[in-house]
Image 1: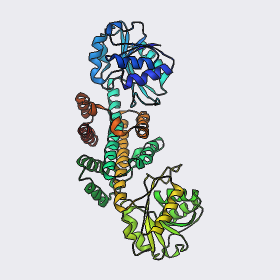
Image 2 (image 1 turned 180 degrees about the vertical axis):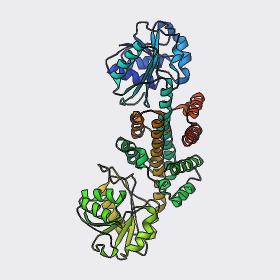
Image 3 (image 1 turned 30 degrees about the vertical axis):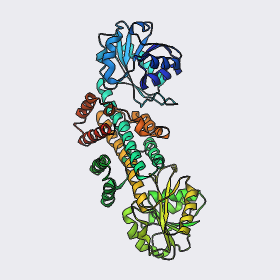
Image 4 (image 1 turned 30 degrees about the horizontal axis):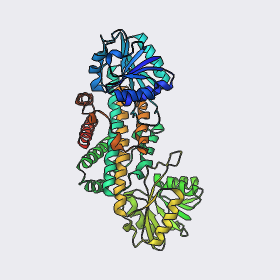
Length: 252
Length: 252
């Protein structure tokens, strides 16, 4: 498939690499910042532009891979009413593309994408489209880069994004807070890596509800008190510790 | 080394298997529940007892692998004042063993251990002892089952345990709450597994402080409001979402 990628960030970069690897032809990269557009285009073996009126008009698909808050604004500038355009945003309705494209839809990667990562992660892809023909086309495209392709509308996509925020952004924030706590206390954060990985790996075989452990679950109030005392210097962590321990006890 | 294991739970089982695999001789398993003691002893190719006065007195080391709240009580019953005894508890001072053992210490596995797991995870081991000779002996023992052995006193061990609770118990609880949310909303929780694993795997190369993403970090209030609205039915998740999003914004 011939594809134009609009955007130069994490999603544009990782999707671009995945698509190229799957044998698609990236016709062009568009980016407001010409240097970044050129750099990504170079990586994808194609050309770039930062002028809207130079956007290649011969692509089968235009992928609008910009941040959720920028989708509408960028789309207004794109001006390709007779083309097929998808966005990659979790929380933006596909209907914002209505009227500005002959066919439109969504290609949402349910993964944390980083442009400078040296490997391409597994990416479940959620697709949605304005019509059956476009949906079928996106299904083929998505399967070329992923084994897990799900058709789902705006509402389901937003719910999956909410779930993703909780398992990714929130756990990563816990790791970041604990990393800082370890540094401040002279502890080696990297001692915790085997534990962190084991907790994630265990999900393959055991429901997290069944593998919960720890002082809150055991009702070990003495240890909880000791921990809260140690966290007096870290008010954010103290609040999070109290709320999550309470929540674990309520879930028993 | 000749070892007696006191306890039949997750820690006793996984440490027992690791020690056996490393070539140590498990002389006996003690457990209050004779059936459980016998089952673990069978797995470790040894005998068991549930009578204190039948505990084998010829071991080089007695490992008290019981829950933190049971350590003192079990230790009182053990009555081996001329022996070397260690406990495996995160939050219990090694000094509770003082007087009841010639040499004493701690062998704390910094890992989430599950007796029915079909593999043995990597286990960083934190050691502490009453005297240099015992510490040296524990160091050799710990290195026989782990590449990451750290000598640290009671205070540091409690701090590491606190960090472990936050990266393991709290993230696992988030997974459990999200699993339930997905079930209630008709979503497939297992779609999130690649994301969960990527978040954990990324720690190998990128500091979590640097890889934070999401609506809170971006200041995308519209998405945060949308998510909080979707969580009205899930008060625990709603509170956690609000607190963690606030904390991410404060950490920027």
